[in-house]
Image 1: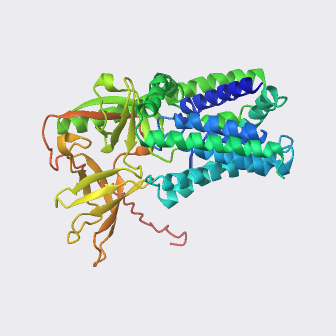
Image 2: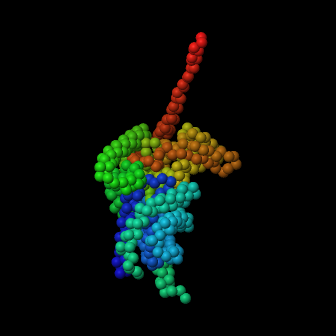
Image 3: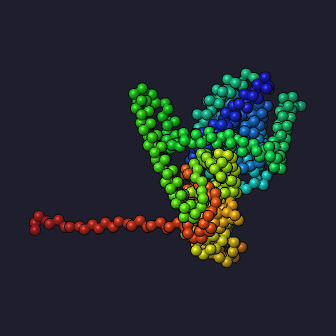
Length: 172
Length: 307
């Protein structure tokens, strides 16, 4: 069961990474950017158990590190998404079943995506990378928050359904 | 006492974090397997991105199209489909026309400077998750492109080649915060360093604090040894703001780019320079002032009926 679950999660995030690189990287979003990958990852993680969230975050981060557009060291996204997945899964436990409360889930996902990007910037600073200046970073973060919230009705039901179909009945 | 599940989660967290840190260490130490993974991904994605960029080129109507998905009715749908097809054709033609104009202007600029160039289509932009400003083009080492070559558009400098695969290359844009280039002011030859800021405008730092620059000065690339990463003479930008406060160690200014970095369709990579330094020969002409039409209204008094 454990192996099949990892296999499914790996396939899911692989497909998601493919969509992000092929489709969403062609679109020039207004204000800041939008990452379907981060939005769906956070939705997925918010619906997972603690261990499932950790493995999902690790796999998602690994895929994001494969992106040729990224300048940061390989493993930085893996580190950030593993930590964020853990934090999201721990903090959402007190909120009960989020699948039946889409508005709360949307807000949590949008906030999680923004915090993830901030965590990535902090990790970049710690690793001594050149940082983006304050206002462009703020614009990017604001844009990401708005787009993640606005497009939630599109990606959230699909993620939710896929998650229910594949994983809900199984646990690590 | 903590439940058993919690301690298992913590153990898993530690294992995964250590693995991630191990990957970072390997990458920072330059292990070729890790650094080669990204170029392998790029090699895999570039032909698909090239195809999908054709498919997604006319994306202006993307969000409005999505918002109209709920409409029904066979007749309306058929008419809409026909209308959309015609619109898409029109947008595609406009897109092609725009790309042709960009290609013509870049060829003109390269021709003036006698640069040997390879032109390529932009097939992807940097991901929103990277905070770095990059584009991917559909030409690579098989077309003679190598790392650290200058990339230009018809208006001026765009960036430098960051990584290359056989059929694609990632370009680091001039607006990226890590981007640095030596520049000189056309005419006065004052030298400085231009840095990307992540936004449309860049920071200029003069090398000599006794020199001054003024708003409207044109900045050209100073050039690097062997023309890599920058060939000399390419227009970089226009000074839009100057901080000439006395007593500072260096003087600063803000520069706006000549190249429109958000709407790049076609760019050219300078393979070699055959004509030497073009000096100030590539300075773009100043825009002509549009004449303001003057309308004179003469009021003619209406003759009164009593007269």
